Amino acid sequence: MAKHKYDEPSAELAADIVESAQQLVRLEIALAKQEAKELAVRNGVAIGMMAAGGLLAMLTLLVAVPVTIVLVFHSWIAGLVWVLAYAIVSTVLILVGKSRLKIEAPQRTLSSLKETRAWLVHQLTTNGR
Image (cartoon, rainbow, N blue to C red):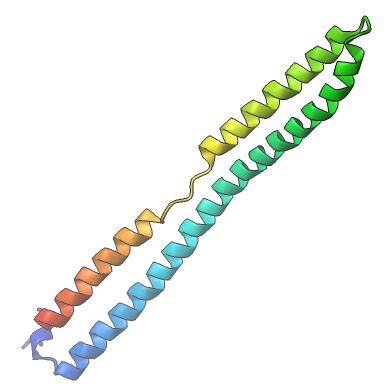
């Protein structure tokens, strides 16, 4: 005669539930680590773009000062072109970096934790049946 899960002693059922819960916790931790890693890579690129944009913005200011001095001479157009080019590129980099920067809760991990909690509550309230 086949032995059913219902015939097992309560201690074995409890041990199975604990073992399953431990495995779920390990998987939840692995998922959280993976999501954090993905978020860090994406935000690292965005922060790098913002830093490059900030550096170019500072260069714009450094070029703008001599340009104002050169304005009284004949080559002021060349200086103005450089200032505008630095200003445009730095603005684009900052805006693109800002649009890519996302600080948010790891949604997959939170959803998985809710499912795990519901499963565990179900297991504990119905004795796994």
